[in-house]
Structure formats: C-alpha cells, structure tokens
Image (cartoon, rainbow over all chains, first blue to last red; front, side, top):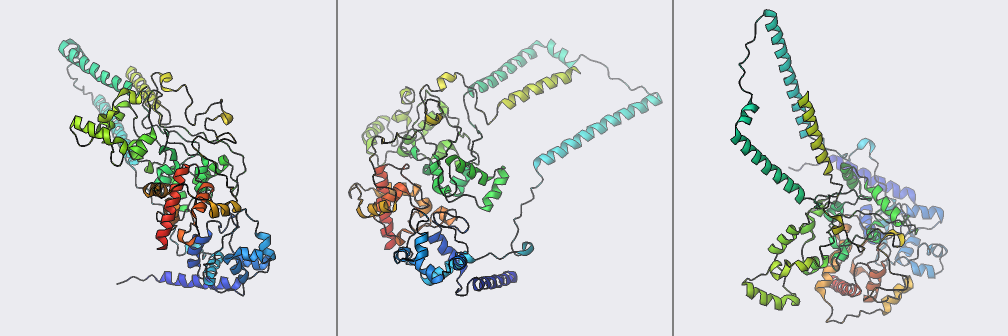
Length: 426
Length: 183
C-alpha cells in the first residue's frame, strides 16, 4: 500500500495558484513559465554573473521583468532580444541597451540557444516568491536533537550520591557513638600493634625492592618526558581566520593540491595566498544555512570568518578596493632547521597521499599536527615504503642494480639510500 | 591537617604540569637556536621586507626565471585577440593527456566537472553556480589559455597555480574533453 500525503498535494496546488497569481499580477503580457525549470536554467547559464538579490558581474535579477516594465516601459520581447543577442541590440541603437552595456567591463554572453520558452521559465524563476509558510506550515522545522544525558552528568550524579552516602555514614557513626556514651557502654578498642610503616622500615629487603621499583618507574617517566621535548604532536593553535578543512576538503572534496599547489613542485607545501580563496569566495559570500548551523556546534560563525577574508583581501562585494592587510597564519608543521624535507619529492615523485603524514585533514575542523615529525617516525616510513619505480626512467638503472644486490623485488626507500645521514642532514 | 596540606601541594603540582601541556602552545625545545633557521623561511614575518613579510611579489617589470611574458591584456579585446591568434607551443608529441588530466582534475574539475560538462562537485552541491558545459561554448586553444591566465567573470586567475607548460597541457586536455562531449 502506498501512503499518500495529501498535505503536499494541497500545498502544490496552492503554490501553483500563487505562481499563477504572481505572474498575472506583475505583468499583463506575462506568459507563465515554470520556476523549477527556470531555476535549473538560471543556475546553469545565468548564475555565473547574476545573483537574484545581489549585484555581481551583472546586476541582481529578482523581479527583473516587473522592474523593467515599471521603470523603463520595456516588455518581455525586449528581454528576449537582449538575452539572445545583446550586441545586436546595442548595435541596432536601442537606447536602454546602450545605457546598460557598460555596467561591467566584460560584456554579456549571447544566449541564442535559449528558446523563448526557456527565457519564460527563467523569468518565472526570478519573479518566484516562495510560498510563505504560516506558523511553520508544511516545512518541517529544523529539529535540533536533544543531546542525550552525557557521561559527565551521570558521573557527577554518581559522585554526588557517594558524597551523600559518606556523609550519612559519618552522621550514623556519630549518632551511634552518642548513644553509646549516653548508655555508658565503653566501645572496645582494638589492641594496638606495630604501625605498618614501622614494620615496613624494619624490613630492609622490602625497602630495597620498593626503592628500586620507584627509581625505575621515575626513570621511565623522566625518559618519556625528555623524549617528547621538541615534539609538537597535537599542536592546535587558534588561527586568525577560522578555516575549516572539514568543509573544504571533506564535504566539498576540494583536492589538497588545489590550495597547496606548490606541494607538487617545491620544497614547501605553500600557504595559499588570498587570491586562491577568492577564486571561490568571490561568489560564495555566505555559507548555506545547514553549514551555518553546523558551525554553531563549534562555536564559529562561518559568515563572519568569510567577512574577515574580505577585509584582509580588500573586497567590497563587487571589486577590490586595494586596501589589503596580510593574514598572520600560525605555522603548525615545522621541521627543525637541521632537517631537510622536500614536499615535491614526496608528493609528485613518490606519490604519497597527504594524509599519510598529515592525518585525516578532511575531518579536521581545526587543523592540528597529526604526526610527531621525529626522526624515528621518518625512518620507520622509509624502511616500510617501497619506492615507486614504475614509469620513472630515473630509477630504472639503479633499481636493477640494487634489487640484485639486496635480492629483493621491490626496494624500500631505506635500501635506496633513505637512511643516509646526508640525505636529510647536511 | 598536615595530610590535607600535603595532598593539596601534590594536586597543585600535578595541575601545573598538566596545564603546561596546552594544545595551543608549542612544546619546549632543547636548543632553540639549532631548531630555528638563521636564513629567512618561506612566509616568515620579518621587518627586512616590505609589509613585514617574506612573501613578496616580483618587482614590477621583472619575471621569475623560467617564466615568459604573456603580453595579451585582460580585456574583452584581449580575449578576442587570444581566441583568434594565440597558439599552443606544445606539438602533438609533447602533449601528455595523463598529466593534463591530473592537473585538470585538481584545479578545474571541482567546478567544471571531471568530464567538462559543468557538473563539478561544487556545482552539484550548489556552492558555485553557472558553470557551463564546454560543448555549449565556442573555445579555441588561445581562448582557453587566456581564461586560465586571467579568469573570466566569476572565475579567478589560475596563472599562479600552474607553470606555463602545465597550463598548455591543461588547454590540450580541455580541448580533448570538449571533443569527447561533442561526440
């Protein structure tokens, strides 16, 4: 059996009615178009330069038809002509076409492949007002799931319970003692033996064993402490602009090398300059409502962070103002000066995934150092990783000779010389 | 009373040690002057440079070694000029579609789609809109190169992502995608 939701049916009819009402009320000439189809067409062909409510390369287009007919007295036929071939209209000497042709330095494309019907649909989309939903209406409100009783609350309750129990015991004990005193009963005191610490001190063997154990244990911890000096694993500084790798590399699947393009060809992986951000954020000035809600979990307002980017790069929403201020990013991964590391060698030649050393960056809301970056860690990897010799003429000869010498099929980086001191320290 | 004092002292000491290990601070180093370089590191802050940063643009009128000049201007006329006259320096033997694909998938595919049909991940997720399919546009190798170099409308410049040769490899690959789409 199929469950039919009648609510949706009525809402669709209502919506259709509203669209019809709107299209007929705005212009007399208007033929009705399909706003849903119009949205697809708009997103494919127009949205590169136009937004509905905000000027971009081209002007904002909400209710463009109504505004044109009110302000300029131009009808839909003029729009057909303009959209299909605006340069022809300009050359024909149309007054309004010549007035708006210098809106932006770049001229508008000709969309001669769009039919009148397509343009009707697009115009219907620009005039479309989403059905207002009285009192929530059909739209399911965003339900924030009630967080279950967290462990901390349970632990706190338990601690409180134990404290109460202990208190009750003390009180009971005190009352009992008072009763005993009142009735004149002497509570039998246990006979005193040698205190345990005295017995311990008297037993020299035990003292010896304990002190050796203590020394060993403290030696272990002191060694552990000294070995982690200079290791910044887990370092997670607060950056001047909150940049979420989770959204960019995880949700949107942007390749690491898109922003860190110099990792392919140079020693450093590169901190992207702000023009790299602006390649996308020129048009993405605010995040989707769902993303914004996700940000609240982390206590971040993503839109404010994008605004910080605009302030730094000097973007006023349509053009660069030229007033820039550098962003002081805080470097996380930093090898000591006496160790040489080259990104291109590992990324381009060896073809190692970025995640091998940097961890699950695509899940990190705040970037942190995943690997210890110690020498032992480097060497372990060199011992375990086979050199990628396929399709690399540079390695053919040396691979033949060395694999014979070691009697193996696949050479590891260590056998190729990856453990020689001078490779990294010079 | 004495024991409480002792316990407090131990607790305070423990707390101090634990609170030293902050995630937002770097660890101690044995001999910092061995760790920290004498020379300038990339992106370093230093008052020796303009704007107190090591990262600088090339001086006006100069180009980095291995680069060549691109003299067509970033205007509509420049675009037409490149479209009509600019030709790839790569001959058919130098074109490497595997490399072109690798670079295209990193830099272009995220919006233009790995097939060039305008259906990249960002487009599908409605983050970036209005990316056309290559088969609905008139392209020449010159116009593709020009647009990679300067960007067009909402698309930004990709000149600093790839070297000149890499850009021409991508141009060749885009032409191949367009041909595949038009089949």
